[in-house]
Length: 239
Image 1 (cartoon, rainbow, N blue to C red):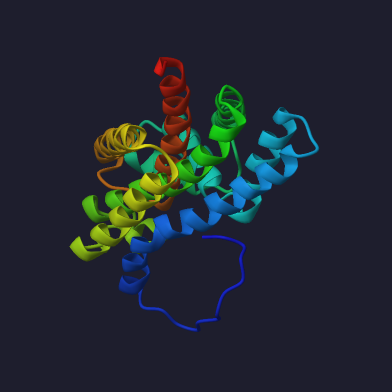
Image 2 (cartoon, rainbow, N blue to C red; image 1 turned 120 degrees about the horizontal axis):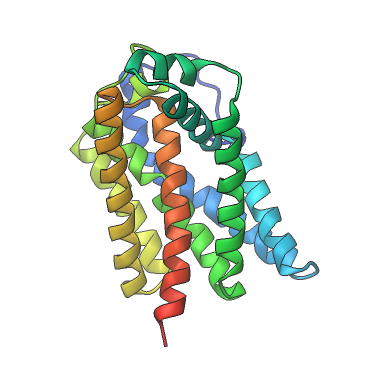
């Protein structure tokens, strides 16, 4: 899930990889806190816009652009494929098309401008919130939907997480949000995260009758942007 070094494990059973989805939000804690720290350090000597962009670049680098890659593949596949088979074929193609390029451009611009609309002391908080909560949809979608193809990351995660994994992942998200933002903001953020997850799941089920690894990454990116938008709306509505 990241570029961070870890213990070398020679073999892992497929079902164990799926159950490891319980710790996706915990990975988000690490990524979110590291990204927030980068923003705070950059902001000491650099303009706000450059600091925010630096944090976005760092988050993408530390995760190898895993979710961004899935986001682009989903837009390419769903934009150019009319059938399930053709959509999956396009999503598997290593080349990126115009839909994917435009999606990535709009994605980065959305993150940048939404974060710049916040006060600096709120930016680092929502960087943590978004990176943790956006790792929850892949866990839920994996527990809910079957794999859309017979191989790939989606097959390893789809229908593998159980009740225990959902409890672990959800608890991680709730505790982190309560420690980072207010209770009211936490409730709103959880509602937004749940809504994006449901909408994404229904759409993936209708188009693909399941999920792929790219779908999971796209859902994470949709959620991250939705949470930044939520932060801006909360800041606007709060007296």
